[in-house]
Image (cartoon, rainbow, N blue to C red; front, top):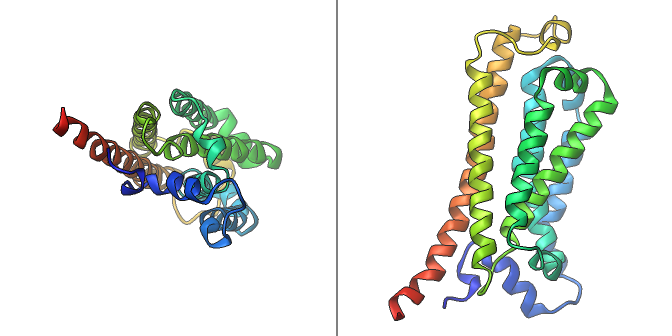
Length: 237
């Protein structure tokens, strides 16, 4: 069977295993640093203030957390704590994808979304739940390289593809809705350059394109590694 390093995600586990349980070289942890830096820019830059008045800006912050920062943090965590991540049970990725589904759709319910746009406490809870669910999905998916982990990797493929589908579905709902779905569209953005409906449509397009593409690409990359590792077994059978 092929070595796990031959896969795009397999290098996470094999490089850590070769190095043993000691501390990682700083250069190997650049995804963790990049993810933390991105979170700082998203949360402590101008976006939170702009998100109060723009659904699209709020969506940029959301997609930045779950589709860019979360996978970077997951890769960094897998490199920093390879044994911990490799010990995740095979079904964790699927459970995490359901958790993220619940978090994303719950926070896009009109009452909770309006609260997150208007109140800092609700915004913090929303963003924390997005980050926790996103990191858990990505870490449980990409942290399962190596021989004997095909079940976990298969679950990771399903988890990422399921998440991609529900991101696309919600993005399409927001994009094609005939009217604004949130009361905050009228109250929070009286001076916005876009109409409330146009702002919502732009946010839906961002979710559909960024969220759908990121999780789809991750799922397909992981699926490709599974198929490559399975091919020699079939040839020798």
